[in-house]
View 1 (spheres, one colour):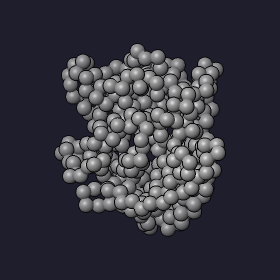
View 2: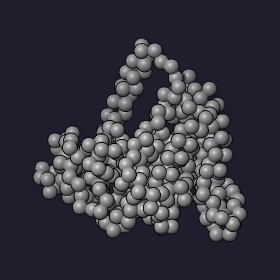
View 3: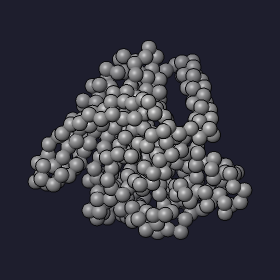
View 4: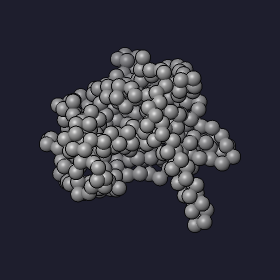
Length: 362
């Protein structure tokens, strides 16, 4: 775990109670070869202790559904009968773990209420869900909400489903296989976002692949990287990544999901993220590119010139499977072709500006 004295000291400062009042957490989880163990989930949630204030925030966990098939493709929500069985066991174990992990208010008595929902996945399609809400009988405080879906809807629609329950001005989105490895001053980040609401709408955190972004320029049609003039080191990012991120809740609802570009199985970065990057590339001048990007307001936390990774990927898709070289090559080729096909479909859909005739926030 990487760290530095300066960051540890800054992040260890007792955060004001306002963090939990301003921020809600959404975490998505889905079938993995790690299941029925709760290793992925516990690794992610325990890592939140590096970021003061996060463990006191209300948490909504979305358990995506699945479809059984002879040959599983996890990113498409298709699993084998064996993996379906272990996922069912995992959901039960995870629910027990979550109820023990969440932060309750001292002296309050809590009870669980349940509700059935219907999640729209398209103009004429939907998936059923069951919502369990842990609520204080005295104050109404909700430390935990779980949403169990009957069918696979994918990351983007799972986040959208969780957002319908968020009432705080900011949301942090987590995935069950991305954990924090470095302290983050969450309170200071939120204060900066509050101070610049028209500019800072999204902040993600560097992983190994995004280190030293300030010294690299991958896309010649994108503006050169340069630190913004804020109290917190933030670098403009011309992309919207799925990995752990903070986002203004209203922006998420109205801008990201308000354009209604998502379908079942989509990832936000493969749709909205690609749309953002393409839009910024269109203007010919630097001023024009920056003007387009400002509507998206995407940044990456860039501590110490990108020398430290903040989050790491916990490999939950491969699990502990033992694969020979030939089998691994076959799988990689198959997944690569499938990814290419999906990207081409998404690009065609975005260019055609296809929008279902329904409003998920109405």
